[in-house]
Amino acid sequence: MRLHDSTGFAASFVLTVASLIVVAASTTTMADELPRVAVATDQKSFVLQPGGKPFVPWGFNYDHDDRGRLIEDYWDAEWPTIAEDFREMRELGANTVRIHLQLGRFMTAADTPNLKSLAQLSKLVRLAEENRLYLDLTGLACYHKQDVPAWYDKLDEQQRWNVQAQFWSAIAERCAKSPAIFCYDLMNEPVVPGGKRTDGDWLGPSFAGKHFVQFITLDSARRDRPDIAKAWVDHLVAAVRKHDRHHLITVGLVDWSLDRPGLTSGFVPDKIAASLDFLSVHIYPEKNKIGFALDTLRGFAIGKPVLIEETFPLKCSLTEFTLFHERSKQHAAGWIGFYWGKNLSQLRPAKSIADALMAGWLEWFQKNSPKP
Image (tube, rainbow, N blue to C red):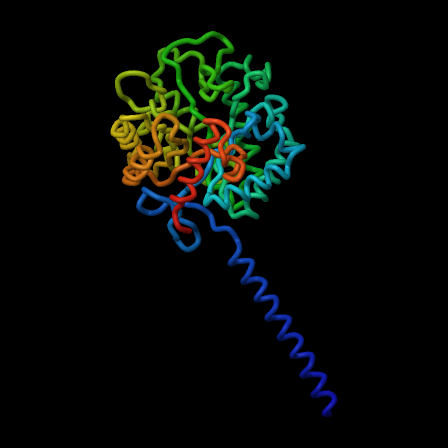
């Protein structure tokens, strides 16, 4: 009888300990799981769910390395470099990384996604999760003109939109379950032309060897430009929502998108905002024109959060940029600058003006990182 009691006690004790271990492991997993980013109820900022903790996107465009190579140019052969860069960006205080995905690397044909590239994207998403970084996935890029598929440039407007929808459908299906996705940015700096362009001429002028601006049609055909922009946005949002009902969607807009005299992109904020979760704008404040940059930002504040998705002291001093950043807090919900693979120890002492500029920027970025 005593032996039976002892054995029963031992078995009960083992089961109790095992149960506690399972509960502890489960609790740790829940505590460590990356929360999802959502729009706050005030429609001006972001929060983490569950819990509702405020979230301020603060990060880098990781668009190319210091040699000008796009991430898909080296993410197969030099993965350790990317892993190291993600750790360095986190150490600098970033919580968000903007990744630019080339259409030509993700679509092998009009209706055929590139499974190898999608697998590598999954690997990148896991890396973000491990480093507790959120990804701004910007798609449909055609930055290197020589890498744009010839078949893609030959398509008409509707055919091209359908390929773009196939791209986003494949990306959303692959990434829907990861909490590390901050948002899907449908395209970097899309533009609706005011008239008719030459057949196949879909890209804007080159900047530093890359084509960042892209046209979504070659002929407005007397249609209202904002109507074309909204129809395009709706088409691609529907493609994303087929597989992902939760992650946020935006578009990376040039600062000349406002409906005012002069150059405009056709993507007027208040005409397309209803289809998006938040607005993204690219602003590089200029010397002695901080007020103008702030007025531009104010034009994007129309009842949804505004992310300054690209910014940098490229055309002004750090002193003026600091002033811009401080005053932009009235309307902006987050800021994303640039990181190109060189950390502060590699940039100091600076061997060039470019290195000195980047070193000063990274020091400023780290100093001004919002508290977690």
